[in-house]
Image 1 (spheres, rainbow, N blue to C red):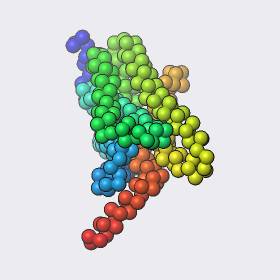
Image 2 (cartoon, rainbow, N blue to C red):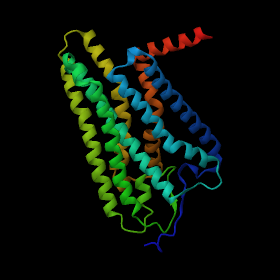
Image 3 (cartoon, one colour):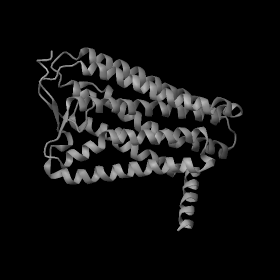
Length: 310
């Protein structure tokens, strides 16, 4: 097996195939990355600085912003380097490590979004026991569980991938090292890897999705029983941002990993990947800041203090 493993690096093609577009794409990805970092850091600073936002809902939002920074930082900096580099390569080990952190970040984000759904369920459906259901210890446990389960999900797929033999070709038709295109380059049989990937993804994603779905079934049922239109609108408004974010993540993720091979397309794969690994981390803080009055109020207060200090 050792003699067969002749590859030491992969060549990333993907978005880098058109030399005339490299500078333009570099600038686009750079702007997106800076907005992602700036937006999520601002959300985290505002939540930490304003005592009114020290609630379970914003505790989860703080950690969602942290995950988004990690998610984007796993792929975008390397993509920026490759837009300007003559040799767009990544070592085999480096590729597998990047794949691990992509899976870890995606897994943690999906479960933190599920925890946020449960938080909205507790707040709307059982407000009298809200602080008991969402105590600080339970919130920490939910976030820790999200990272732990995400870690084992990523580790399981990484272990099986590390056992594969790569002896050529060495060109990945993608801008990052995601698992599906990586499996296509293996010289050895990948049936076990495909079964592990599909089984773990379907089990993991469907469980997280069901948690969101069950929470919102109860939430919608409770809200519809509210007599006043103003009360219904207020209850739904606290969930709208979260629903948009969940939709963005799950739609692209499910289409990417569950579409049949007969409709596989390099361009389509990259569009889905850009959606959930590059655009979603940028859009999340924008969605939450635009749709959330408390965040906007806290942001104005912080900006007002900064102006006063000047």
